[in-house]
Image (cartoon, rainbow, N blue to C red; front, side):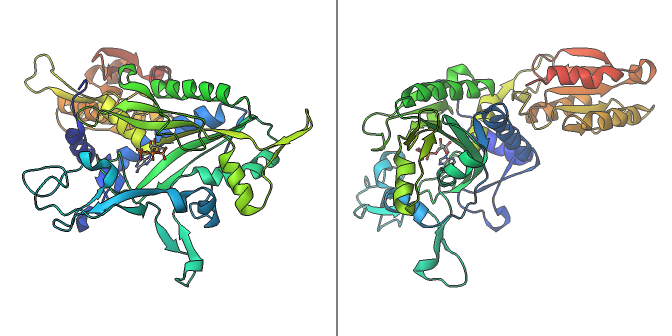
Length: 447
Ligand code: ATP
């Protein structure tokens, strides 16, 4: 076990400091659904913005999309989800618990002492039954089978069904990709580990359409690019690793699949945060068949038609948010102080608050000067203002939420128009001319 388990500490920090709350907490909570508070929504948004920038805005060959959550029910027959998106489940007639038959070794029976389901004499496990993970609802006023719709369990299908719309409207040529960020829903049987596995979550998916025969080369390209993205986000190289799907793990249509895995520490250890898949022409061919509409690409230069192969990169926004939090959490001793500090060493580009401004005292024009600076910086960054408590306490509060820079207006500031800027990680303090502050921070906060 290489990294310590910080999950319980993080759950408590996230609640206390406004990152993540349990959904509908006042009613006792909803199972494995979480709400992002003021700082959490900024953190996750920054992660999504980095992904959108890397995948869509900085490239000519990927287009963005925001498809609806509710899709024609035939979509999910074509994709294989109606028949195949299932987990095998067993029930225990004694404790009424429900467990995944293929993950019994990870489950614990509610009877004491804690054991795996089936290991107590009293356990009465049923035969495994197949349980579909899609949430079902009805469209329109009639609750009949003809009106069934599903909450999408992945965003990818919205991309496949719009393949030609995007290609033709944007005059794209293969190879090109379509990317989108959106909610997905899965009625997970064994959810847990905070926001690691939830029933409502957000995915960031990209399907890259390529000519058959060039697919393995593109697969390698995307594998490398996606690993680099996680490194650029600040995730430690020693916590990231590829996991190659073995023949047994590979879907029948997949030509190759690698997961980017991250070490969440403790017993959770290395877990998938992103999948990079070579899906062949499976999805477009299926949709052609089920919709009776051609989904071919016409290559004008070589005068040929074909159904492109797809390289997919699929990453969970919430899972990466959790990885970023786990990666960033540290406890440190502070010289000359009995109490240490908790720091979220988040990459500055994803920190929810970029800078905090403190007047040292509430008099001598210090709050006024601090507020003028606050207004100026707000034009460029998320900035916090705090005038309560000792300066040490104010630093600790910002360290704990990952604010990279703290700016103090002190007795000298009102005279010579300089302020101190304290660096979250090195604790070094620099005096900076107040008129240069915005440019100084902008240079430091470059992505
Ligand atoms: P797992 O094996 O963990 O269930 P999966 O292989 O089913 O994941 P994919 O269908 O490939 O996952 O989904 C792509 C990404 O979406 C995952 O890498 C993960 O980051 C995210 N994801 C999938 N299911 C969940 C969930 N229930 N909660 C949060 N994120 C999820």
